[in-house]
Image (cartoon, rainbow, N blue to C red; front, side, top):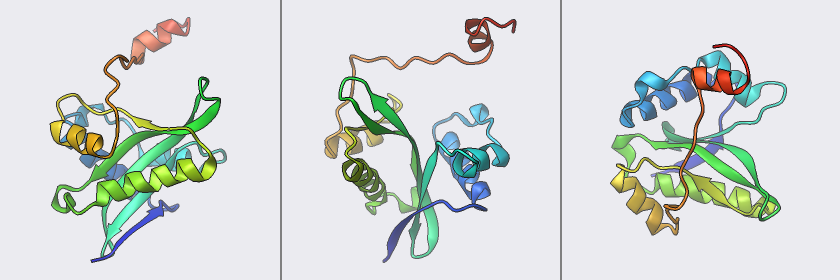
Length: 161
């Protein structure tokens, strides 16, 4: 059995978007996916890409991905990685693929002198929470994720919705 992890390549935005949709379906959030192939292509491969994607293959078959961007901690004074999406297809779970993706991102942090790797997990996703804790992740119960979107974002920007 062979596992490989590589960066997504130009021309694979359809693949990346299909993995995003599979993840959204798993998370019961498919209705929230607005991204298009063009949007993903621009984010990953445009003039100033700020998004990164690693594709995992098992014996040459694409079985998962991780999507992340670089963030910054004012407290540590260093950059880090914010993992936006981590997904392994159900048929390939339990083979160490998710752990390999997190190892890949941890190595990216360590190699660059960055201070942390962080992400959010849905509170109902007990298998993922247990998996993350087994790797040393700490659930940040004292922090609440905040989000402003749609009309509220427009209003906050001082624009009429």
